[in-house]
Image 1 (cartoon, one colour):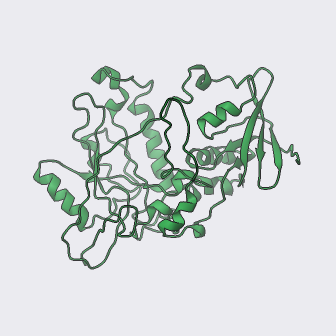
Image 2 (tube, rainbow, N blue to C red):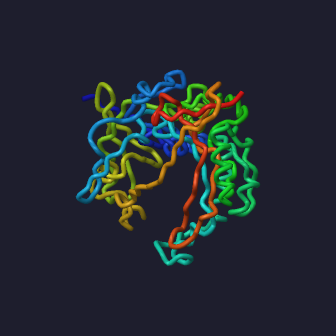
Image 3 (cartoon, rainbow, N blue to C red):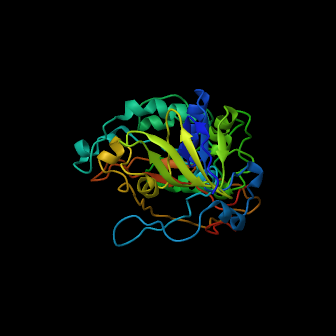
Amino acid sequence: MANSNDKVDVVIVGAGASGSVFAAVLAKAGKKVVLLEAGPDWQLDDLISSDIWGRRIKPAGPPFLFEGKNPYGYVYQAGWGTGGAALHYFANFPRLLPNDFLVKSTYGKGLDWPIDYADIAPYWDKVADDVGVSGDAKAEEVWRPPEKPYPMPPMKIFPGGDAWKRGFYALGMRLIPAAVGINSTTFKGRPACIYDGWCHVGCPIGALSNPLVTYLAEARQAGAEVRPYATVTRVLTSADGAKATAVEYYDANNKSRFRRQVSSFWRHGRRRTRDSCSTPRPTSRVWDVGVVRRGLAAVYGHHRRAILLLRPLRQECAQGQRRVRLDLHGRGDRAALPVHSGASLMPASICSVPSWRRS
């Protein structure tokens, strides 16, 4: 196998949502950055509005194995290639509320966070400005402190969403426009959503705030390099385990090695990252407190769908939530119980539920 010892400042394993952010920040700071991506290097014109084609940007194969007697296998919302799962997500951008950070103190359940709402709120605002979020921050003040307005107004609400709204209001339940990472207007040269409803297989026009048009694009512009079809097999460290010194990986043709000069960041499957490190493993709080391989959470939700008796003229929809309700937040032993409504689906899409629009 050929061996490449080219030196770089930073190696990032995975060009998905978080890897792209690291790459953008570090490349713009002048670091020599290389992203090693196990899948293809997708471009916007690779994305096609088809459920059959959309399977190509999602992984297949055996279940993801973690711990316990019941392995958890789920790949529908995972990703394969640049952009990762954020290439085809629904782009719902709800914020935590202040009491989400004080679950133990408030409800006697779980644990309190070591940070509070005020610590993280400026970063929500920054991400919204970076990637483009549509919503109504003023309306959200019924549940959270005032913050900056979102950079774009809320998305359109079509008759299907209005029907749900009327039903909620008849029961005394209020709904507000939901915050989504989808362009309601032109944003940073990216066009507004055309409401064709194919968010879940990737947006070919760039209205969806996926890494290809946000942080990964910024990283490339700043000089970061993406190496597709690069599967990392081992992270090498110094003898005392204090520093990562190299990353071994297989590309499409051979085995290569990257040596780092200053620092190395990596993110991959948590189990694979930990098990692939040479002994001793890198010293860090992540390893010391034993949180790696213990963070899997399955989020369960109830779904209600309907075929509404509206005059079928033209279909327009987007799959992110159109309205959100948080009035039940904090009741009983729950820290959060959000209710989303108004998400529309294509008639030949993942759930085959039509959503029609009046003229």
